Length: 279
Length: 250
Image (cartoon, rainbow over all chains, first blue to last red; front, side, top):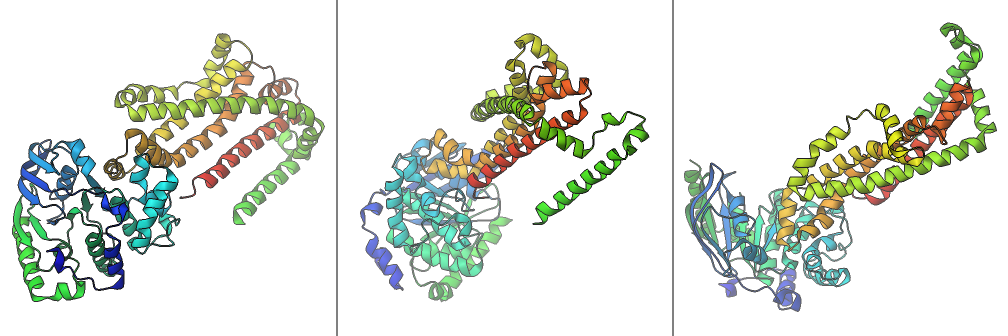
């Protein structure tokens, strides 16, 4: 599947060339296995019975109606919550601390810390691990160069555009060098044009820095474009209504991809599943 | 510009009206009291100048009390708020007590504190500390708890320890709240110092006001009040300035 990836722009080729650099080589592979998963907040059953498997470096999309427990599922995977039934295994670990060690979480709002510059935000994980500030900034700086954020290192988050903020937020999870990225509607707050740009950017970034990704989104098109597989979830309590294989290889040219006949057919199937599950 | 011109104009108008009313004896006549009980702004200014060394000496005493009392309350209040933030048991146990501490009628217990701690700076610091503790503690606690839970989750997946979340996320988030609490506190700390000095008149602007009022030195009493106000405003302004320099992201 990886050899299908097309790199349409010079920028994307740079990403690929940079891939084997030492800063990005550390993240080990991890697959995710979710077996017979159930979760409840007290009386409220959020997840009914879920089985999902994501191979190492696979990208799984989760779409479903609002409030269906997508974000809860993401937190369960990331080790921020414990299931009330069943098992979540991430890279061989099924305890919350082990899952937490293997996952980096990107919240819906970028949540960049306003008192830190862009690069200090991106370097947070390194600082938390005790890396000295100068060294952490240097390491994070190499990502800034590779991802076209040169010159924005010392800009305050408040002065960045919405798209730029999401880029920095994503780099923050990438710099953390974890095998699994848990992305919670990362582009929901962006306008349509910026969102399309960011989707292409993310696809290229993941081609250069392969990770196992769980992407929660309410945008079916986004899920089908960015992911290998998309699980359509039902209204709460969540279960998988349908699992679809992406119709286009990842990191394909977005405009060509989303207008291709296979893409349109799959999108309609996903929409139908979404409607069925919402009932 | 408007920020400065409008309040200055109002102040000038009030002083002008007061000057006219006092110097013509209008206020004293209307209230049926002796004229020397109503000093005019010009008389107050004259007393301010003539007694400048006495006022400065006593202002220095009061300022020291305010700074020490406020400083202790700041350290204790922030420390206590952090402890209550980190331990739910501590928070549930002590929060009602912190609120209750605010209901203590300081004016009434000030003489008792003098009995307890003896004359001197002890009871005055206790009063200032008691008054300042509440706004600082409550504001700091609110600030620490104002952090978006998503940010905490994000930090946890970025391998942050509890201490690192406190240092890198919660403490900076609490800073504007701490400054609000400190600004409220420093203004009331001046009142606290005067209350303490009135209960145990020894030195300081409060003690000076107490003596001058008893000796009908009303002009100098008013001059001391003006110095007190200026002190409170200056301390407030210093904190506001520090806040602007430190909390640059707001």
